[in-house]
Length: 518
Image (cartoon, rainbow, N blue to C red):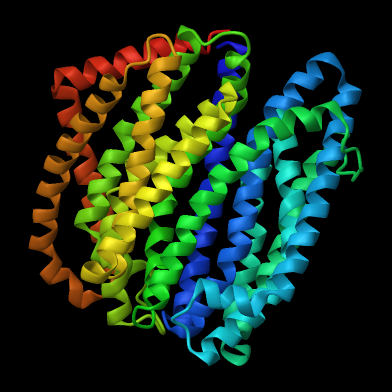
């Protein structure tokens, strides 16, 4: 196996392993939240307060990781010292920006809550403002974590960055279970601040082992900063706009009955659990894509992109239809405990149906977006974000009244697919041998076979559900696991029998070996 293939494989494996562990602790965290707080107005207030910190962090994290890796890699080829000075300069700029943003949000907390949740009453708005102020200092620690993660990924270190959320999740689990009933929802805000500090600590340790440190410097005229800033606005605006779609969802959901914001959040977290595994593949691929994009946009880069896209279509389609058919028992097994009642279960499962329809798009967008980053075509990302977010907002406004939280979830799905099609079309023009038709064909074939396989297993589930339900959620969970494995075996059998899919997968694997053979 070549060095490049070995690095990608090792990075994907370590990232996927740590992402799985992080997701598992995240699931337990959500179980604790559902058990202690349910899906009422206090949880809605916490989620609204979390939106701003998430929006700023995700924008910074995505922008830093997408621009720092290509620029740092290029500078390191000429001078290690200049690359290290560039890292100090980025750290200083991020620290200044996050401190100023945190101070601004702290002072404007009541106004921001009113803009984010105009449907809140005075009590809920006051609570959300207090929670927002408690969490604002976390922006500094999360921003510096993003810089550290970008540096580690340039060194081929993927496991520790993917594991940085585990201590945060554990801290929130312990605090919610131990102090949640006594001190209420404020425990989660303080826990989020503690979690941000723990995240930074986790990624600083491997940096020290590599002989590096996160030192802050004020070097705004460094050449690397100029290179980064030329890419940064489009990237930052791109992710900020996607976060703005989440804000619009929260604004519209705040006017719905109590618990709808929580239902959207709980359902989206379940959807993101398997998608994060595919995100780990995109993260591990990014340094290699950056190398392949330097100086050429030929078959090597095209093959390197086609392989993960086809594998994504192969694996995400069955997960999508399994989720669609069995969303109600899935939500029941994960959340139906403590304060999470039957009404919350129904609302969460309804939103989950429409989020599931966009799983394929969300998984592919991680790979497509990082390919665009590697090519340095950030303006394309801005146009894609504008189109995707615009589509999401328009469909949200149309669908929120007839479908409530389901309409908001469906709007997100439609907007995501709109962005996917734009990115695929752009790459088909830029990369030699990249054909959109073959990717779409894989998605349609895998979806059709998944529909058959999991539709059949769902009928079997309905047959056995009656005798199993009286025995409790544990037996229901075992039935869901058995249904998944039976459906997967049937799906794989159909894939093996169908000629076009079998040929496409073999061809993709063969091309992928060529692309990573350097």
